[in-house]
Length: 340
Ligand SMILES: NC(=O)c1ccc[n+]([C@@H]2O[C@H](COP(=O)([O-])OP(=O)(O)OC[C@H]3O[C@@H](n4cnc5c(N)ncnc54)[C@H](O)[C@@H]3O)[C@@H](O)[C@H]2O)c1
Image 1 (cartoon, rainbow, N blue to C red):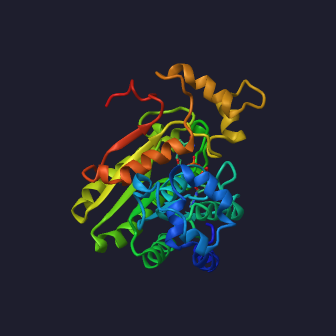
Image 2: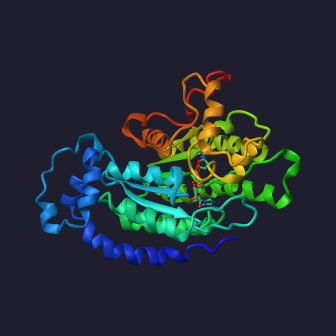
Image 3: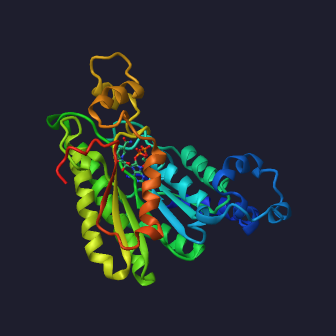
């Protein structure tokens, strides 16, 4: 089990210094919408006074999440980081919680590193919002609870939790060791339950919150090459629907985004690519995407992490304030042939 919590202090110390430099309202106001790319490049040169003098135009819908906080497990890279950037561009303060341990026992490929987590934090901050980073494992309830308490104290509330951290595991059913089976269930399933428990312990007293779970298209079907992973992603939908029933009267809405193949290190790594195209030497992610594409109703074989991020934001927005217990597929129509 990875160490937990001990990077929160470091992260906050760095953040405190950065917060003083970055949290003036004027600067946040200009770092929105189409201005984001240009603003990142110019950010280092902006003085506080200069930023405050920037025009306040171009806010509108892009500021939808100003004053809100978003806590993302597995936020150091991939879908988690893309989600952080989409919410930050809409004005939200962000917290990234990630195990940041490349060689986690019984995981087939490297997870994010400390450097990934630090880079993610500074990338989000460059969008003009506050960002806290926490090194911790979703298998640890206490670490998540402490991190979420810190977020609520520092940002004023815990508004959105994205239950995103997860690992993939490829192979035929009979190949997995007991430790591998336990690890994928402990992270993807028990971890998601513990994230939910920590989130509702803070959201219930607030009487508000949104929880968005990242399942998978493989959480809607069987798959010979991902038999255990698939079952963990089915389980996630059960957790989300049960949470929707349990916490609806506390004004906490719980929904699921189910992505198809996404271009992140979880899928784009030699172990997964090699097993998906066993007869090809050094297969690439693009080859796998092109292999899958003809079976889909639209000519697309994978999604980008940002495609998933926008669906997550949808479930956190005002427009879905009467939606809970639902699943939104972001999978290029691959599920159009499934039963409802
Ligand atoms: N990439 C895909 O094709 C795809 C498709 C469908 C669903 N998903 C799901 O999307 C989610 C995000 O995956 P991704 O594709 O961005 O992968 P990724 O590997 O790029 O990112 C996952 C992040 O989670 C972190 N993490 C892993 N175990 C953790 C733990 N125990 N505690 C805390 N953090 C942990 C990793 O360090 C990493 O930063 C996962 O739940 C995954 O199952 C991915």
